Length: 127
Image (cartoon, rainbow, N blue to C red; front, top):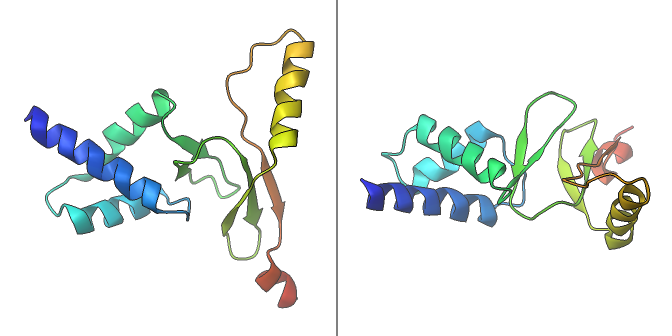
C-alpha cells in the first residue's frame, strides 16, 4: 500500500509540474487519471492538500472562487476577466519588495498571492 501511495503521489506531482495551465482540482484529477485510471479523486484531493500544507505546491485564488494549483512557487498571476485564463508574471523585484516591506513593518512573511485582473491580448482584441 505504501508503494502504491508513493507512486500515486509522484504521478500527481509530476502531472501538476507538467502543466502550466493552473488547473482546478478536477482538471488535475482528469489528467492524473489518464496516467493512472485506478486513482480516486479522494486520493488526489488528500495529496494536493498535503502538498499545499507542506508548501510544495501553491493555491491560486481566483475571482470565480475556484482554487487553481501551481507547482512553480509563488509569483504574480494575471487572471483574464474575459476567458478566465491565468497567466504567470515573473517579477522578482516586486516579490522582493513585498518581503522587504513585510520585514520593515515587523511582520513575519509566510506567503504572497498577488492576482492582477484584466483582459488578455485575445479578449482585449475582441472588444
